[in-house]
Length: 262
Image (cartoon, rainbow, N blue to C red; front, side, top):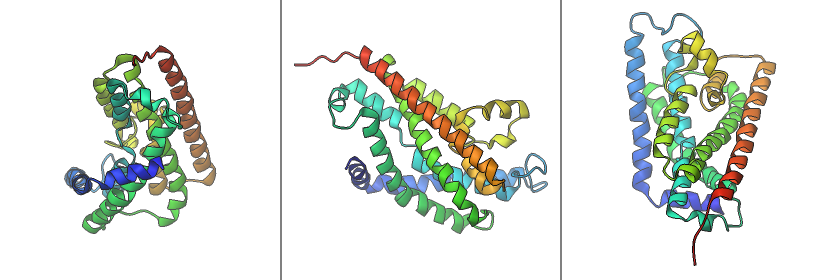
């Protein structure tokens, strides 16, 4: 019911749907022409290593920005708004737990964004840049479970940032700063394989790579089944750890939170 309501809320503002749909392909065009300009001298970026060809990078960025359209929902701002307005008092007496309520909305909005933003944007990108967007369709079997982990992890990270508002009241600067860190560490702005080796090693030790970098690499680079399974297990373990951390922080926040009313 909460998910369906979130979908209906999205459809109440068709102008937002159109603008969001148009804005992402426009942003992607910047990547497209930048990559072409950088690679004009030799057809590859970062040498001849796998995953650095123009086609691979164009495919990478197109999928990454499509995923972002689905998972970047601003849950942190929604949680902060409820805390700052005092509406969290009503949220805490709902039949659903606070985290469950926001995740149900996250699922509903994710489905709406997939249908109204993601799929049309992907069709538009393939129409405009279809010659450069290439991957093996058979690898979608492995990509989908990685995408599910990316979806849940994105929620847990955004919810974690939102919980900061229980302790600081205003979390906009924290949210903006952490969002930029996540964009870099997840491989949204630059694939982790193009970072200097020392930096890439540190970034690959963090969980954020499972939002964008790892799912997309599954499509772009062949890997043995045991490697793919171990990657899924690690991603699931990181997601569970974030889930448990959030529940612990939320419990601590509610013990400190004081609600006045009549």
